[in-house]
Length: 288
Image 1 (cartoon, one colour):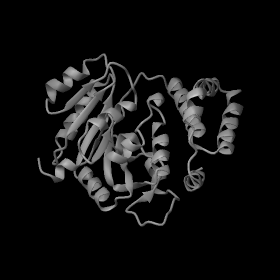
Image 2 (cartoon, rainbow, N blue to C red; image 1 turned 135 degrees about the horizontal axis):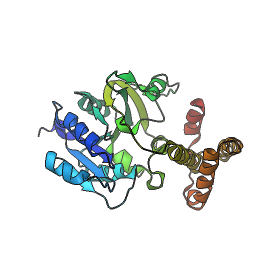
Image 3 (cartoon, rainbow, N blue to C red; image 1 turned 90 degrees about the vertical axis):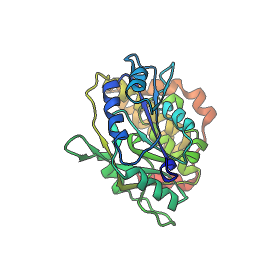
Image 4 (tube, rainbow, N blue to C red; image 1 turned 90 degrees about the horizontal axis):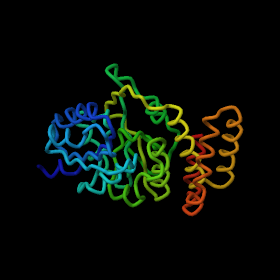
């Protein structure tokens, strides 16, 4: 494999979605460029590791004994040996040329730790609403960069400088799946790194029908949002966010459950609380 191609690996976390994952691997292995691919399986019960090994023997599939959620991506990133890692979900994949373009950008801009790519959804290729927001980010700074400054991204299409990602310990193990990108983004910015949105780097996302409990997912995301506020935001901001959700909890049992879940995590949250520098908090307030 050429030196240029070894700059980047692809990491995918998955659980119980073998059919979707196999389609994603077909798309990724068909790219003109050749990249090492690492699949981290979150204790699936549908035969995912065997299916990957059978159909794609060139893919490194790591079978976990527990469901670590987003933290599985961190394990995959540790296993990678390249300077950069592009994350895919089991229902998303990079377009031809995008990973090479992303690596070129990070080579040229050594202050950038994370590149958020444009995500086109489904066969209609509709722009993901989060990407539309990132494309209008109001953040600015002293350095000239090849994309909008952001403080967030979609994990299904995030491209990271591996050393920076691991220095901030990657995705938090306690967050599972849901809003885990916010804490990572804040931690990278607090460490002095730039995060940018670049719409010339593209990924496709084909969301699969799921039996996922949407109320449970919303509850988890509310919990994680509170944890992030308590972990990284100044006390007045954290208290305001908490008060807003507590008011909503009276009329919404899902919000109430999310607040209760967050409170149960207070002991470890307080031990790990590390408010961000003033310039990062200012940027966060600009984003609302």
